[in-house]
Structures are given as C-alpha cells and as structure tokens.
Image 1 (cartoon, rainbow, N blue to C red):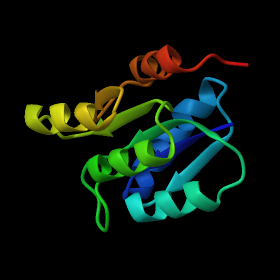
Image 2: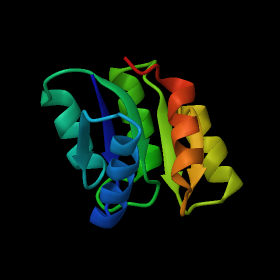
Image 3: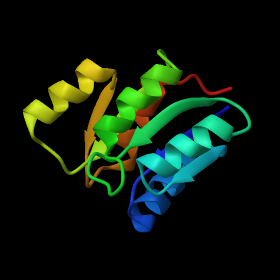
Image 4: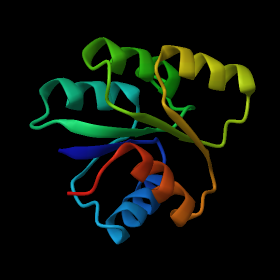
Length: 122
C-alpha cells in the first residue's frame, strides 16, 4: 500500500515526501502530472491507499484526475494540495470525489493530521 503524490513541481513533491517520511509513511509513489499518475495507477504494482494531488498541472489537471481515479477506484481518499482557493474549483473537485483540501504552503503537522484522518498507520 502506498501514498501517491501528484504535482508538477519536483520541489513540492520532495517536501511532501519528506513530511510523510518524518511521520512514518515510507511507501510513496510520485507522478509529475495527471497523465503520468494515471499511467502509473493503471500499471502500478500494489494498491494506492491515498492520493495527494495538485490542482493546476500540465497535460491533465488534478480535478480531471480526480474523476479519472474515481472511475478506477471509487473509495480511495484524495487530498487536494494546492495554492488554489477558488471555491467553485473546490466544490467541483468534491463533487467528482475529492475528500480533502489543503492549501500550500502547508505546515507538516497540519498536513499529517489530514492524512491521518484518512489512513491508519500500520
């Protein structure tokens, strides 16, 4: 079981991965945009138990990716981690199946509390 981070910024992916690692989450997959994530989900080994998605990315944005993930997996939690504060985008993402929304920049402790709402550490 793994957490998948999808963000076009390598720096953001690194920061999120480090935050997760500090709190004991070590099985982490990364993707640089929605298309990359979808390819990895479809061919990937093992199950993703949490998605952390940016909203604004090239090729396929995070909100479109939420809809694509839900076609494959209707129940895995999806946290949107973004600078986006547009309420209509938040509502649209929620309608498609996003389960949480965290604004960047974020504090690790607050982010991990959101992660832990959806995951139980083994």
